[in-house]
Image (cartoon, rainbow, N blue to C red; front, top):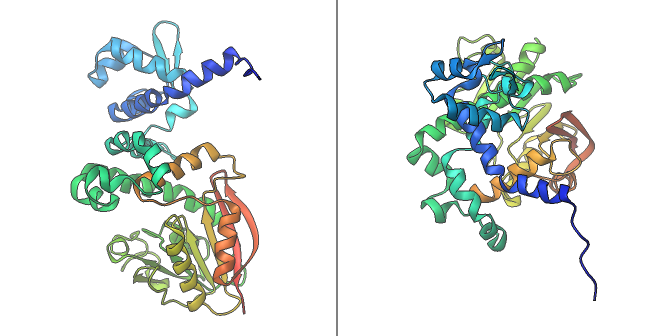
Length: 343
C-alpha cells in the first residue's frame, strides 16, 4: 500500500486562490463597468474622492480595489489612496491597447451560466449553449442579448486593431501585388497593409452584414477605396478571388469539417505557388497558453469550436493541399503558419 505524498502549504494556498478565480474576474468586470480606471487620474487619489466621483459607497469601493491590488490591478498607498499600475491602465477606455471591452466580453452574464456546465461539455462533446438558452450562440447574442452583442463587437474591433498593427509589421510582402483577407471582419488588417504598402491591392471577403460595416478607409470615398474590393460571401462555401496572398486570421475555430472546407476553397481558388498565411492563437508552445486555453474552453461551451495546436493546424493545412514552410510568432498571442499552394 502506498501513501499519497503530503501537499505543501503553498500548493493548498494556490488551489484556494484558483477556485476563487470567479471573484477576480467579477472584480475586474465591476471595475470596468464602474469606470474606476477612467476616473483615476495620474496621481494617487483617496478612495473617498474616487467614490464621490463614481457615485459609489467608499467602503465597498475600497474592498473592491483592495481585492484587485492582490492581482497587480491598481496599487494601494498610505493615506487610504490608490494609484494606477500597468494592468489597471489597460482598463481605461482611452488606453492605446485598452482591454476594457475584452474584460467585459469575457465576463458577460451568459458566461456565468455556461461555465458551470463545462463538465457536461467535456462528457458529451457538445456545446451546451443551445440547452441553456434554447438557441445557438450567435442567434442568442443578436436576438436576446443586444448589450452583450455590442460589447462583443467593440471587443473584437479593439482586439483586431491592435493585432492588425503587429501583423502588418510582421508580414513581408516582397513580390506580392494582390492580397485577400478571408473572414477579415471590418478589414483592419487589410487597411493596415494598404497603408503600409501604397502599391498593394486588396480584397476583403466576409459575410454580407460584416462587409457592409467595413472600415471607412475601405468603403467608397475612403482613403484606400480605389485599391480595394469588398466581396460578400461565406468562405466555407466558396472563395471567388485570385490573389498572390491569402490571409486567414483567427477564424479557423469551428469544427474540423468547416476548417477543411475553407482551406479547400482557398486551394481551389488560388494559383499553384500562391502564398497562404494562417494566423491563430495556439494552445501549445505559446507564452499566452493560460489565455488561449481559457478561450479554447469557452469555445467548447458556446459554439463547440476549438483553438488549434501547432500540429493540428499543420495537419489540416497539409491535408488541404498546402505546403507549410514555417511557423513563426507574430506577437505573444498569435502565430503565423506560412504556406504555399502545392502545384
